[in-house]
Figure 1 (cartoon, helix red, strand yellow):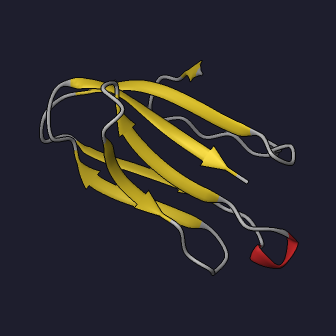
Figure 2 (figure 1 turned 60 degrees about the vertical axis):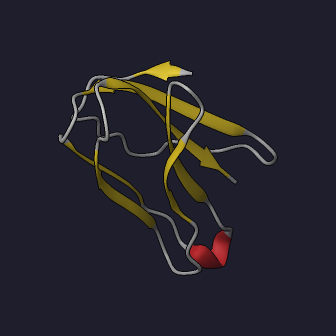
Amino acid sequence: FIPIQPPFFERGLALCPRDVDFYGFEATAGQVIGVAIGFWHAEGDLELNLYRSTGELVARSAGTQDGEIIEVGAPTDDLYLVEVRG
């Protein structure tokens, strides 16, 4: 996974076919975690998942429109992983 320091904003990233990218960061209990990816659904679909370090799924965005977004309060102090799947 790639460690990031929020706020993290990067343009022009690319996801290779059948590739999964993970980004990790620390958050404290109650802190609002906001994650968004922008893309054109007509060019391919991406899924966005947020996990705790234990592997527990915290939130998922698997829409069928352009872009994906997750906004959720951190349930506990932890290292969180964002999964971007093509």
